[in-house]
Image (cartoon, rainbow, N blue to C red; front, side):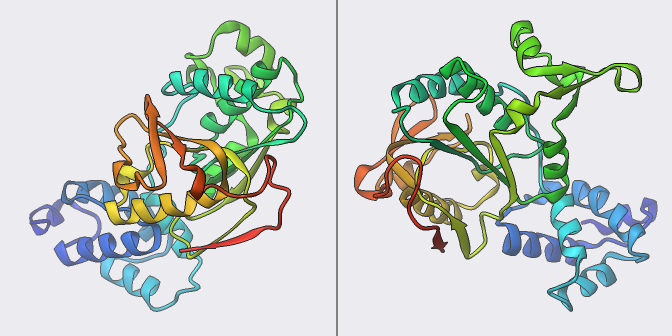
Length: 297
């Protein structure tokens, strides 16, 4: 029971409040919060109650539910999303991506999608991998980097990180693709403009009924995202990925994720990498020069 902890808490937060939070974030973001996450929910949303001058969770949630256009919805969602990421996380994926890129035609632009960009480490690693694959600072690759959390997207767009956040990156890669801060920026490092130029950042909620996306992706990174969704939601998202991908396109999953329930759409290639089934792939050519498609749920 949550009520036992309320004596030590700044705001009243009971079982009913927690159940409401769980239902709301499941509905708008597809995130399934475990019962064990109650303390996390309190700590993350308590700051929003302070910002909005509420003294109890029930009134804060009432204000949200009474107004679908309330700008606080964005802060609510941002507060409850998880953004654990790092450069070269699950490094074997980038070895596979490099080989995949080198196998593709250089006569057309290659489109990649990072569907959970977080603070940018993953899509920037994808961009660096593309540059290494083509031995060029301007490879024929463009990367769409999306996330539901606008706060982390703002961080990602800046491309600035602490030195301890790049400790997995080899020194030669750091020298080639990053700029070290000086003076007031000492201890910080920034992604080079050439790397940033390959990326387009955009807010996108995988739970939205419509995605306005152009078909033609050769790879989609959707790593360590599906673990927060129920299996039926995972399947619906995967079914929507398939027609956006070129034949033989690859879907990169997280190390603890298994998409066996989508075997009609994707075939496991190994090491949490899946190949889109040809009959489910988009019919446009590599580069996605066809019309933008309203991909609906």
